Length: 187
Figure 1 (cartoon, rainbow, N blue to C red):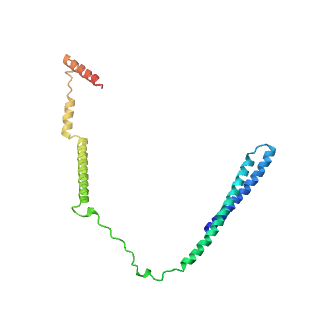
Figure 2: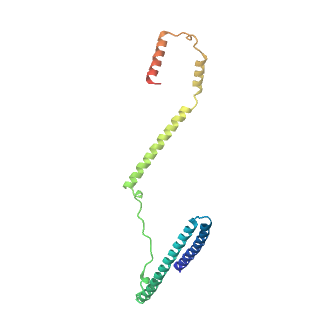
Figure 3: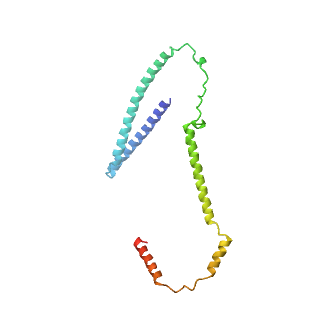
């Protein structure tokens, strides 16, 4: 019934499009007489011819399908007479799901358990290294002790102005050598 309904709907749509195409072809003929443009006339005629061909094909398919339905219906009546007289449904057991095997990681000494243990050990080592690095950073970022701060302040309070202004040749030569080394290295 669904197929028959779909065929009827397709035939109706094709017929409506064909009628509209004939109307456009008529309007195209009027335009040809007034302006000389033939586009609408030929487009409408082409669509009308295509719709006519489709309707012809649909009627051929419908005739063939009607012949098949009758042949299949006759065959269905003949096969219905040969029914088995033994009831097989009563001896069937209820379906039970198959039991899944235990995962290999659950059994001690298996290769999968060894792989998981190795992965856990690597993760523990990585975590320990990360904790150590964080501890070292915290120690480096910690403020200095009071004794160190006092010594640093005392050393800064005693300026060494006595050596200021005096530059000997050895200091100049060392400075020039450092500059030449930096230039040669590209810095």
